[in-house]
Length: 80
Length: 183
Image (cartoon, rainbow over all chains, first blue to last red):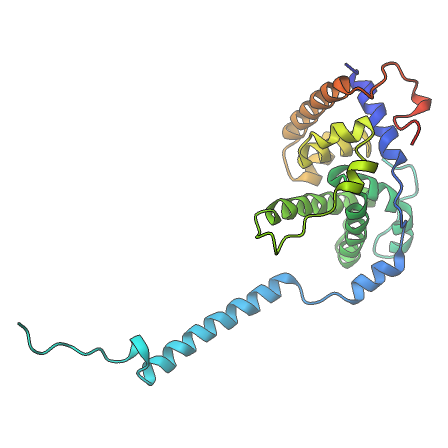
């Protein structure tokens, strides 16, 4: 079994031998910076707000127009 | 960690990119064990660092700051990959591992690193390759220094066993030959 020093040396030798295929690509960094959209938290917040707005609007419209389950329910007046 | 002159990320970012690119790439690759993903994540590390360059405080060298971003991106990437496996097959396209298996798993160290969890790999590489102290690694990974020490000890024990059991490992090989003879 290798010693800890052996493992340390092997890790260093192996990692040192790793070379990126493309290498440093500064123009790619600039392109990524330029093509960045809105941050994820803003997208999620906007989507959540839109969903809440849709649900509230649907409730208000449904209750105002008496649509579906929001319409007045028929109450049986003749009890057996 | 580095004897080179420390650069200021807010004014010398381009030079910092050229100086630190390779070592950041190697640290990330040691965690993800995938060269293509490591290159992509290295670029993303510098994109994030560039956006945050004005918030950099010189409490740690810029290299350690970049590694912090890179290692955390790498761990997040692996977490997303793991979660993606639960998606329906149509939505999840598994990365083609054949090239990786063929080209990268042939050396004993990479095979031993594969047996570690990403967090153990991160601790090992930051300590033995980047030369960070346990306290610095604790800052990078956001865990107590004692946890870092136990992760390193556990990882080294696993790696020693894995390398010792590997048929490709040659004991008493001189350091000048390196671990990747014949690559």
